[in-house]
Length: 162
Image (cartoon, rainbow, N blue to C red; front, side, top):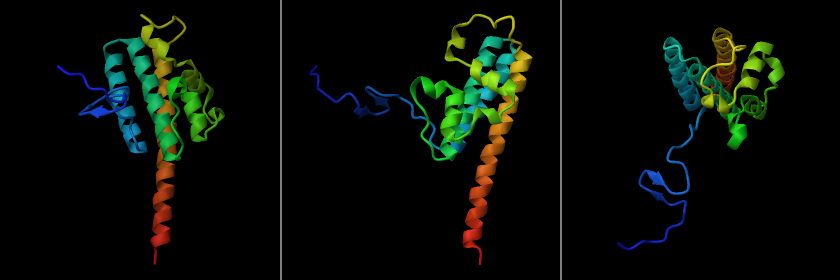
């Protein structure tokens, strides 16, 4: 069998050499859809009393909602380590973390991908408090996204109004 030399970024069907097999979501709605899927996963993990996994997925949910805000505002979504830091993503989207309640800021600041390596939650972390903070963040993000959506659709109607 003869080997052929190809650049490392050449796509072969669904496989991309030197890159990711999967594309990131492209629109705010795409990111929100992923966020809601991960939130559903977190609900199931909570039901199964898998608290570390639940909390990890709540962090994933927050990350996706923050990325939805970034894309909705026409900003570049951070990549690498910053792409998992919800507070950095929010700042990139143009939001100061100070607009969020302290419990939500704490929830976001404490999220780290290293959580996936923990066998149990630390004793001082209460899953109910984390779920409450995550839900407040999701509600806040949803409000921001809807506000942005209404502004754009209202503006379009006004421009096209007789």
